[in-house]
Length: 376
Ligand SMILES: *Cc1c(COP(=O)(O)O)cnc(C)c1O
Image (tube, rainbow, N blue to C red; front, side, top):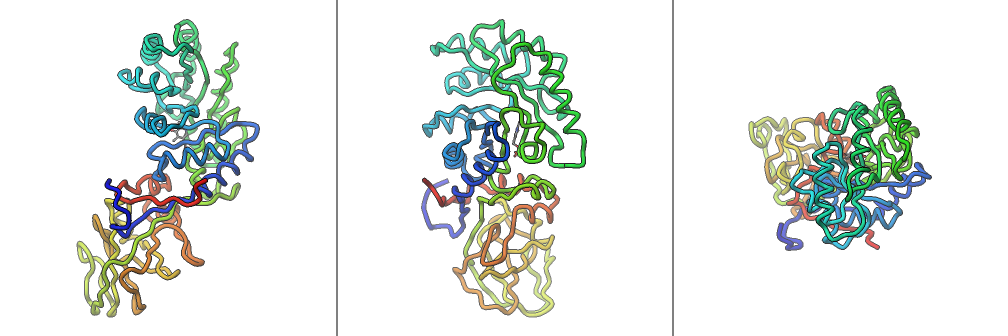
């Protein structure tokens, strides 16, 4: 995206002070465990580089990414902290993993061998640390518990690689009634018991695990959504107080008065019962404001008051029914965040749209320029 500041009256504001505060709150909650700040998907839409810097400044010891490319972006920005790749890299990416000093999660024989070959070819003298992931019930990626011993054996037998960690991933940690987390941890513990030479790092927790299930913390937690100030679920939100870091803003681009009976937006699904002022806001679903938010009661804030979206959100614009209020071109609209005493959260969108807040924040697209507050 071109960087022409101010041309588009739309912006995402990221409060890095909130990121730092959330990291400190989490570190406090999980101590003595360490914290890995998950900054995949461009820092859940917040910007991976500034978030990574803020998280490290607040005491996070590790960063986590999904893609080799995401790790390279951090390295190119001069970030030297350890970076965990949360899933096994593609075989063809092994050399890039080694070259960029990323720490890969592994769980296949071929993946481990490819990394060992790449590490041996490189001119770095120290062995590449890898973390073995065991599938204890998420059934996304990982080796089976019974495969773990032979893969650990393989890692220790191959020159070039060394076992830096053992990990797993939780499927239901945001649901405090569900005993599945305990079952997963029991399976993981059983694997750990069979390992004579335990690596330095043992980790299982995502944000929900870190906050709500102490038995999942081991000595490192991998927190994503919580560092952005969003609780993984309503239940989990009662256990911790976090500060949302992202807000979404725009300015009114067009104002018109329509008569009773006028139908607004595609499909003519929003019909005015009375004459009303409809304002157009230049942000749409291509920016991450879901199309159906306008059909499910979605609201925005203008002058610290809530107003309903009028009809479907379009690709680049959406309409708002401001009734008889005086709203002018250029007035600020808050789509996510706070204005006065009103606040619209990612959870509110998620509840209206059968989504989760992770989708809401990571869905705010690259067309929306980000502004940063609280840089240190
Ligand atoms: C994304 C991810 C996390 C972070 O999850 P949150 O629920 O956002 O805290 C942790 N671990 C793994 C393996 C992940 O893929």
